[in-house]
Length: 122
Ligand SMILES: [Zn+2]
Image 1 (cartoon, protein in one colour):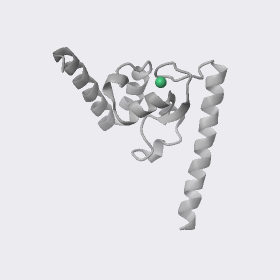
Image 2 (spheres, helix red, strand yellow):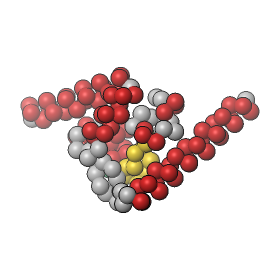
Image 3 (cartoon, protein in one colour):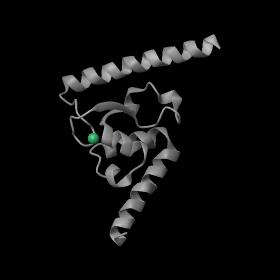
């Protein structure tokens, strides 16, 4: 079991490195805020394609965005009415389109359903 935990420790280390690179860059570009709503409160690193779903993309910088807790939770719980307002939704969709067809279409469907319901006033 030692090799497994070593591998996991290695992944955690790489992830920490990627996180600090993202933070540094965001600071440099004066973009240290929630990339989905612009808020400056309680930021965290959020995976577009979750770690459970795509461990292979866990340490890929393009898969990681800065989000406030509220947007992070909205993304994880697929709260469409919040997701449709994400400033970086176009980026997220673009990333999904390139990396995961299943999730890409699931998100398109979720967004469409939300828009339909809004039209019908449900
Ligand atoms: Zn936010």
